[in-house]
Image: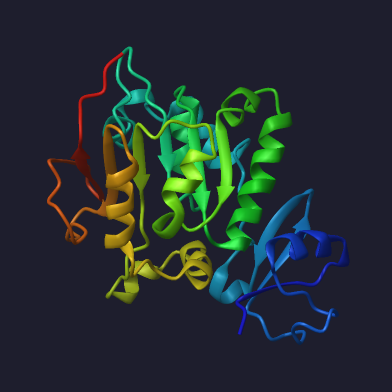
Length: 257
């Protein structure tokens, strides 16, 4: 059973392009899917039962959390910026191979990095595509959004070819694989429940790390919950962390200006 369906006929071209099921087109029965991809208030959203999933989910780089982080987030002192090697005079290009909702990619692009976003889940890719389109026409975010390049694909399987065709140099590869939480209290956030319904978790994370290590020219950085074990594979060379998150750094060579 598909987790997401499109009911709005105006979105059927999008559904066909991304291979998403459509109600009324003989592909799925109405009510069968848990989530709906729809147009709401001039943006694309994923909506489900509000008791389980809360408010509809959208990618918004212009207002809200993204706008606040762009203005007051701490610049290159942020954990993701430090992990990816953004320092005074050094701004590497980054491949975000597990783009998700694009939040880390947007932070890196707002600090001047060219970022390739790779997303494998069709509905999440659609949200990212919509969020980037809106950011590209807003005067406060268009320069940042212009540094973000979105492709759909499976990074664990096709990372080398996706990067080769993108035009973005893979100096740093950023990975944030979904973690299979054992404690159900970790799923309190309804937004995360909705996201996990679509994305699941990444059982092939070791393969993804291996692919990233083969493709990155300078370093691979892996975001983890602070107390989670590292991914299976070679041990990281460095670790940086804050109260809740950790980055494991696998370094090939030093980033220079």
